[in-house]
Length: 170
Image 1 (cartoon, helix red, strand yellow):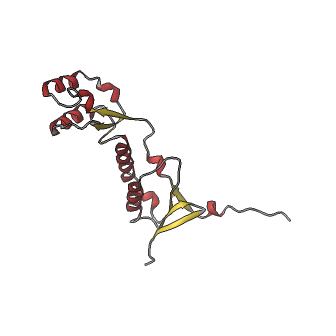
Image 2 (cartoon, one colour):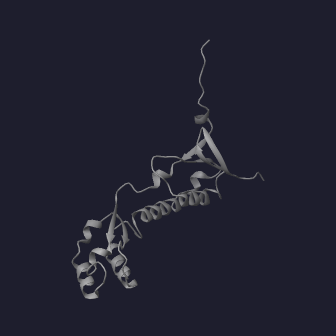
Image 3 (cartoon, rainbow, N blue to C red):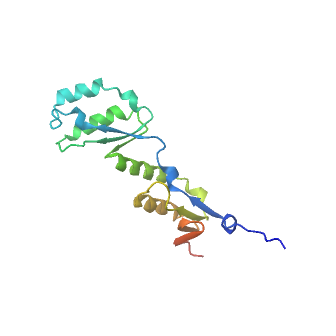
């Protein structure tokens, strides 16, 4: 008698959602204001404006950019405004903060653009323990996006899940 193996996970109707797929595919570029400061301490307006005008902004075309200052300097608010006015026409996504903060902000933006309709009345497993560490905020926002529409939300792997939410029957 031959035994037939049944893949119960495949037949369960679970949708696995891997948050790693929302991460940027390309490297995040960093625009560090430190490089435009006198002695890496002082912003001289005339020199700063001139340096930004002469900067090759094309290198940021269709790229994700983190804008930061890696030294302890006092940067006037208008300087950040000036930088974004140059960057925005070229880049696809700009975030104020370091590379990790930029990646997290990009991830959350992608989650918030999720088509909720695809998950209506579905049983969803939000994958955990992947190759790349995913910030807790991403799990927070994906749950917020799915809860109004999903039948149930679980965390983990289809073969071993932790229940998070289950819609109550009417």
